[in-house]
Length: 276
Image (cartoon, rainbow, N blue to C red; front, top):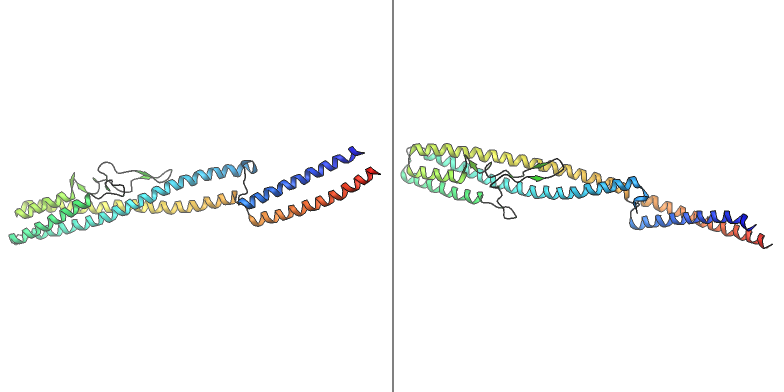
């Protein structure tokens, strides 16, 4: 007789234990805010969360590169705009000096102005970044990675920005100052042509820097969208739905209470029968 009732009792105990475990799990999910406590809870979702975590780590590193590159590009743009403006001023001064009616005093004044521009250009050409390195690399332009597919230089090299035929823009202007000071028309004309090439080079450099800046802005926008999307997906996979979890917890607790009450009543009756 005892064996005939032990099996149902054991099943009831097992069912109540399972409900209790569910309650504990729900309480943990609510307390931690995470419905995935271990990979076994949902192997597929856990694998995807791990993949997303790697993507987020990569995005953080690439985002840092984008920020650094954007700062360099902005600094290069500002510096190059100043250089371009000075080159245009130099060109205008040399054109004035090309007028054969200028007095030697006027030519000397213009030469002095050109030398001043040359000094300013030299200072700008020696601009360094926040790490103390040349802003415009003396060798190949510094390549940076911004995604699995995107690798490029945020700032062109010195050769592509500050030089014409291997000669620095500041030197071109300095040579022009010497030509103007000498009053030699042929030399002035030659210097004018060289400085005009420098003006074109500065303009082209601004274009290169601007193109890189646009690419960086696009990448930053794309990464922001991707970061938001994968963060939302991760939240859906691993974060607790508090409304659903609390409702389920309440239901499970009511079910357990009812089961315990019924079990106690049935067990008492069974024991009474056994004793009689």
